[in-house]
Length: 272
Image (cartoon, rainbow, N blue to C red; front, side, top):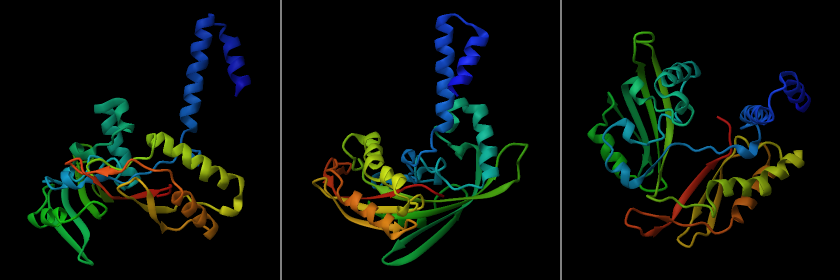
C-alpha cells in the first residue's frame, strides 16, 4: 500500500501541499474501509427508550428514536430505503436510518412479558392501540418488549412492496448508567481486557454471537453478570464473566427526577 501511494504521488508530481493532501485523503479512504473489521470496534445496541418517554408514546415511531435505525429488515428492502434516504439526506443515511417517513405501516405487533406471561397485542396502522399503550406503560426500566411491523414502501417505483421489520426494545432510565469515560473508554477497556486475549489465544473461540447482562447499582458497582447468549466455548464465557465482574465503578443511572436508581445493562458483542 505504501509503495502504491509513493508511485501515485511520484506519477502526478504535485506541489508539496497537494502531496500531503492526497496522502491524507488516501489514508482516510483506507481507514474507512477497515473500520468494523476489528472485533474490538464492534459496539452493538438494540433500540432503547426511557421509561418516562414510553409513557407518552402514541405511535410506533415514538417507541424509540433508534427504532428504524436498528430494526432487522430484509437486505433488499433496506437497500431500497437507503437509496431513498441518500436522495433526501445525503451522507446522513449512515448516521440515522430514519425510514419512518418512507414507509406506510400496515400493522404493528408488540409483545412483552406481563406477570410472568407473554402478551402480544396487534393494531392496524402506525398508531398504538389503547391496549398496546396500556401494556407499555406498565413496563419499567430493565424490561424489554418486541416489535414487529408490516410495512409498505411509499413512492411510485416500489409502491405495493410489503415487508416485515422487527426488533426488541430495551427500557432504560432517563439517564443511563455510564462507564467512566463513556463509550470510547468502554471500548478500549474491552479491547485490552477481552479482545486482545481472544485474538492471542484461539482456545477462547468466538464471542461474536455472545450477549451479556449486568446490573449497575446505586453506587455504580457492577454485579449480577449473566451470559444471555453463549460464546462458542465455556472458556470464552468464563472470560466474559471475569471481565464484566471486575469492571470499574460506573456513573449510576438517574430517573427523570434526578434520583439515582439501579439499572440492568445488556450488551451484545456482535453477530446478527
